[in-house]
Length: 467
Image (cartoon, rainbow, N blue to C red):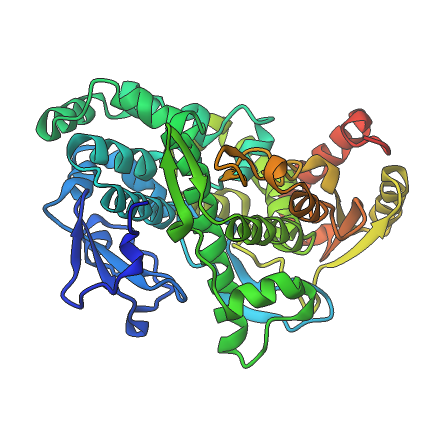
């Protein structure tokens, strides 16, 4: 078993890795909510996560810096946020509302660099060097580069037709073909590099298996650190609504990376208990944060009204968002639609509230009553979200006989406990009441609101009572 790089202290002077990435010991003075966007800022920034023993910087003369210069389309991901920005963090009516802005501590570009650094650590541990290591690092850096502005909002509006994975191939064939060819020549990258990158992003092959670990690791570590820092900054403990698993994960940050390895062409976790803990944290984030109806208030408003109004006023198509950053879109919304970013969160001292229902038909009746009163309400069903997958069948461990099998096969009781967390906490059907009346809307917003209501009435099968 190869000794893991993180088993030893990192020298204060830095530890150079493949890809032009240099590791440094974690240093709290470099903790920051800053989001670098220009290439100069990206190359000067120290990236680190509280609880992870290292930070890293990008060598201005190294491979990743060259990727960003030769293929500038990869830099757009530094302007697309991981989750939607909130001016006030609002998770539950009975917990403190934390003034922001909150951007979940990272943009897609930072996430991509996190994944590239993790891959460079794996390469160091296993003695992988040269073009193969660079190919693996490139795959992680590029995997989110085709994400449209506003991310999952556009993914849902396009009925899952526009996604970073589906669009990634265009980076090499349409957006940056000349830069990619020159990159391959300069760094002697294998001929199959474009295919390798796309397959990795889609979870295919050994590198794709590693990617699924590394990708979720970055989300979990950064989002938990952001939550903890947001409440701590204002003198609060993490509210009980987040549950004991996430409480423990913020007090004792857990990193799956030192437990990842591979052999026989398969990646696996060498500690089944570590894998179980990681999968529990991932599912708890899904049901207590990512699909929490309070956190959906911004996404729902943009998806059902704001973006619809913008497209109507500008004749934009959903594919146009593939060339924009979040800030580009927000400026257009302000100019064309008259909507200022996140001014819905607190209006006249009021806040969004949520009503829960046992059926979709009951929710639609309540929304109709609210409409007759001139107040804005939007409907949301957790059944419309991507269904949670515990991943107990995907990720591998060694069983008692030393064979690589799924966690579910090796430890069925532990897998069942993890899978039990894949159940939403809140009732499936809800209505978010915004602190507005219809006469608060600009004309484009009002048109989009009426169009959304009409579409809901014409397509009731989207949210049947029993899916």
